Amino acid sequence: MTKRVIILILDSLGVGNMDDVKEYHPQDIGANTFYHILDKTSLNIPNLERLGINKILHHPKLKNEENLASYGVLNLMHQGADSFEGHNEIMGSKPKKAYLAPFIENMEEVKAALENEGYKVTIPNPKMPYLLVNDLVIVADNIETDYGQIYNVSAPLDYISFEEVLKIGNCVRKNVKVNRVIALGGKNVTPKHLQASIERRADGLVGVNSPKSNVYKQGYEVRHLGYGISPKYQLPTIAVKEGLDVSLVGKMQDVIYCEGAKKFPGVDTKQVMENILHEMDHVNSGLIAATVQETDLAGHAQDPDRYADRIELVDTYLTEVFHRMTKNDLLIMSADHGNDPTIGHSQHTREKTYLLAFHKGWNPINIGERDTLSDIGATAAAYLELHPTENGESFLFE
Image (cartoon, rainbow, N blue to C red; front, side, top):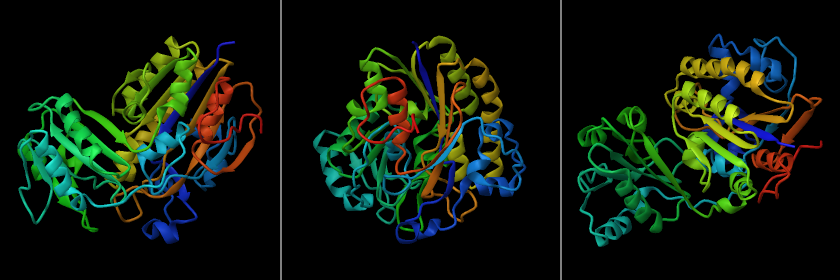
């Protein structure tokens, strides 16, 4: 029997702060991304309502108590609230404790390593410290996520190839132990504008404000270089090794490495959803995994209306997703963390995520509160009759 799993992640659409935020992330106390977007907007999501989202949210604006899908809540096992860690957890990796340090603590060591490989490296402004490589590429803190977890290698791709940017990123990766180094760049971005997008965050981190730099707008390329993560034990790689088709769409293909998978890059939500439909017409058995990234960008911009608009667009496309689903398809929807646009800061929020699992032949149940996002990957592997993932427990037969 041919089976398919469609995993759709709405990046950062959390449903309430984790129980540990008082000690770990006190700035996130009271965060509830999805609920607060409903508070602030006239969000219209009939398909998500039909699936049963209000069984999780319990919001007075949502009157439909129907639930075609099984529903529950997932806790984050990874530290902080991070897209790369969250996505790799979703796909079945067991999170490892992160090493935390602002880039300034590693800057001299990285500078020496890059110079040893023949690059010109300067520190243009000691009062706003970052590395400038070959007068083009900026190595600095990621200022859009948790303190000290990620360093960005940002580039104007009209002036340097992404292959060369990736070489710089790999050099940085070899010389630091934080959980991620991101090599990224875009076209129609000048070196001058990229440097003008450097900001200092309130907690002291210095880096490129990526949305303001315009790297996402045209010709965007990115590679996430993780620490201590093995794709071998993740759902996509397990599926490919068993001969199944695997399609990674949108941000999913940025943050999940899977040799042999088909990849469909893109930030635009319409493009992501169209690519899902396209793959539903062409993949007979296997995995289609996609991430809608524009929700997260709206969270960083602290823009509830933009956030609502992107959720509504996804909801509209769900009509066609349902139509194209067969009796052998499993649709799982969730998020990777929160990014509450009303909480008072522009970074990710440490939140639990919603869980909706829809199969036309299943009687929907309350799956309850789960310990890890990896239960998504574990369930998909069990449904596809694959070897289990490294982490997570299947809710398939609950």
